[in-house]
Image (cartoon, rainbow, N blue to C red; front, side, top):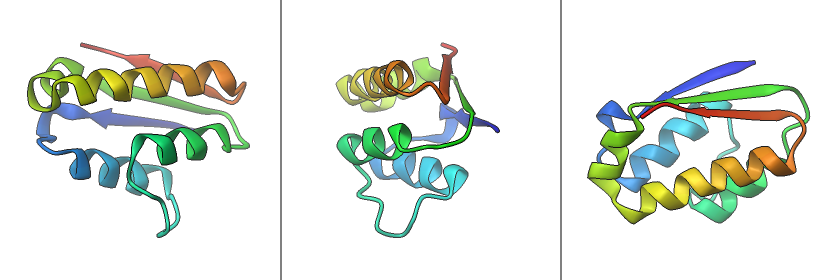
Length: 89
């Protein structure tokens, strides 16, 4: 499976987590934070490629949180053989 996260329209942390939860069909109890995201991504049991576009916009909007988000995605990709992450500026 492949999903694209387009950061062009994201202005808040909650929007980012809601978009990811929707695209990946996370359960309602998904915590909507970076720790919960890491846990959910490393629990994925089938191959998944996440493509993040317009990341520079996310950096402009969310600052250091965007960098933390990127680190979580990349770390989850290292931890899970089922996850591939591609980030485009």
